[in-house]
Length: 416
Image (cartoon, rainbow, N blue to C red; front, side):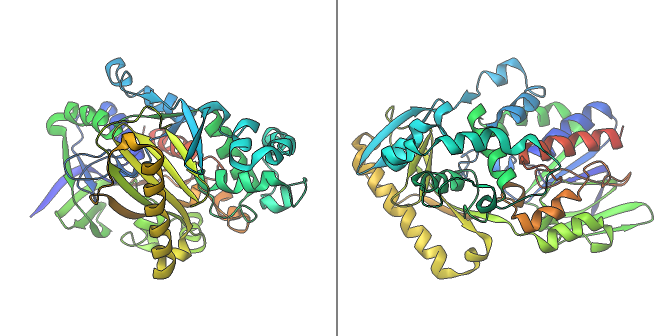
């Protein structure tokens, strides 16, 4: 049996949830179907509950936090926590810094010693000047960097770059790297976002049908109606909103419906992947900062109460090679063992951890050669009366959070 609605939203990540809130308020008579392939809403921002693990990606930047705040009540916002501390672990010793210093000389000293702190001035200059000309062509970091090629500061930037979503420093796009650095400096905010937006879904009442665990298989557009086939059944609507990343949606949305700019993007650009190991400890540890780098294992650690998430940033191409993934898993497990040895308060090592491999998104780390395909994506121009797109990969901004906000706003204008 096919369920009929006015709108189908494919994807219940942050972009899909924000668009749902805006459209349900503007069109209270619309019947909306929300399809999500995971067993709970939230996308990469989902929290751990009901047997589903999070990915350690609950942190969002200042601009996106301000934008999301408009959709939440004061009661919801009281549950949001700003990251306060960052740290580095070397030789079972943790150095702790204010989060605002995550890309400052003090953090550089912790990661690379006195030599890195001494060489940090060119990095500070780079962070403050690279983005002055937004129309300048994208260049690789190796072309932008004017300092010593053997500087100890570059070792620090390699580790920070992976925290920001760039597997390789030299080939990373300079403008995007600086945008991510500036975003982190302004702060990160974390919360059980999926649970907060659950209230928005409940407010929709009978206007909304939520189908989690719905893997979309195919979509077609005939007689001014979309028919979307999923593992939870078929749905029809006059409008379809694609709130999945292009590399996911290209598998089920026919190429004829993709704007050329998005089709080129999804076929020529590559995603960055995260290998994550999530673990639950017996009790929160006050000595553990929200973000911790373990340079010996090239691993980033995100602490959220009793949950600790170990992350390794990889080139997407490497994730299709089993040996590379196995090596990364071993690094994560060694990092976990070292952290427990350094902080006995975490309790004994457990074997109940959860490992996941996630394509994080090319908006986080496009190469300079690929950047031209992003520059051609106009979030407003790709919206159609019957088909819309939103998410952090729909736009040419170096800052993926801005892509998300711009695409959601473009959709609102197009469907107003």
